[in-house]
Amino acid sequence: MKPYYMKSLDEYQGNRQYDAFFCANGLEGRDTRVVKLFQKKMFKVKKWVVFDYAERVAEKDEKEENISIHLRNENVFLISTSYSDLRSYSEILQEVIEDIMSAEYIGIDITGFKNQFFFPIFKFLKNNCCIKKIDAFYTEPATYKFPKKRESMGYFPNVQEDTKVLFNYAKAQAGVEIRSIPGFEGGRLKATVLVILLGFDGRVAVRIKEEYNAEKVLLINGFPAYLPKFRDISLMNNKELVSACNKDEIFSTYADNPFEVYNVLYRIKQKYPDYKLLIAPLGAKPLALGVCKFVLDYSQMAVLYVESSKYVEKSTEKFGETWEYHINFE
Image 1 (spheres, one colour):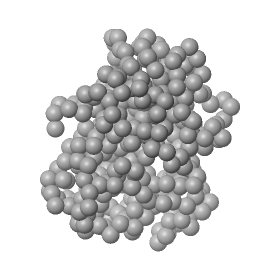
Image 2 (cartoon, rainbow, N blue to C red):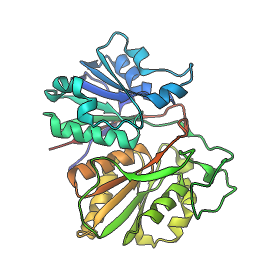
Image 3 (cartoon, helix red, strand yellow):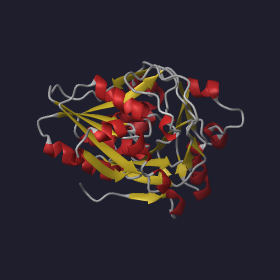
Image 4 (cartoon, one colour):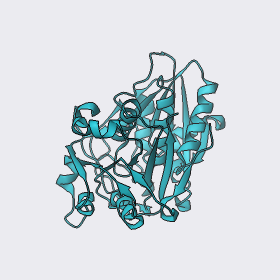
């Protein structure tokens, strides 16, 4: 892979201008961080495209900040949608397509998006705009929140209840379904390798393995360099999968570096050239960004995501570093 670019936005000095910038309202406050930094550094954005999910509006705390509050004097196009919205991104973005199709400089803050929503945006922009790259941004959490007790375990079959606090981490509060991200179903190759990018929720990873009868299961573990104390939690919480794999079936990478994730996936692809990779990015969002770039380059691969009728939205606290990544399409 070509040399890549990632840099802390907090330390960046210089001018910047975007024709369009995409972001989404979240519930944890981190989604407003990029907007505040842009204003502080006096970056110019011609049009802000803000996604507002109905589920988050319904659950938003009155004290929580809203991106739109910080963009009162800006050119903002607000997209009201939901997790169950069946519209394609051509339909969702219909009213702003003319503005963004001729755009040369586009940015996106993936902090407030779930994987199944920002992947199609990247694909749409790559296929419909005259751009060579996208500047992607992500704000890390200061820490993660681990609930002391889970109320229900019924939707994770064949997994025993565990009393360890850290093992109780979960994003889904209700029944889960494993699906392919629309537009990222991959090719028709029958032979498959399941690649799971480990997160803290080990039960979901087991569920994915049980549902997909792949010829091979490989694990990628990201070490959050910004949170050293969480280094081994992903391995602990996925002990059932880890113990079933050989050492050469477990790969390591940096949780804040999408380009190194890309490189790991490329090496796996070279090792299994006749297989379709089923990739499940369950870990940190920069890992998912690396997966997104990889499957845009190799469309025969598929990406899986977890869909739940209810999520634990506030699973992190405060914010840490804000990273900028240049995702090249050339």
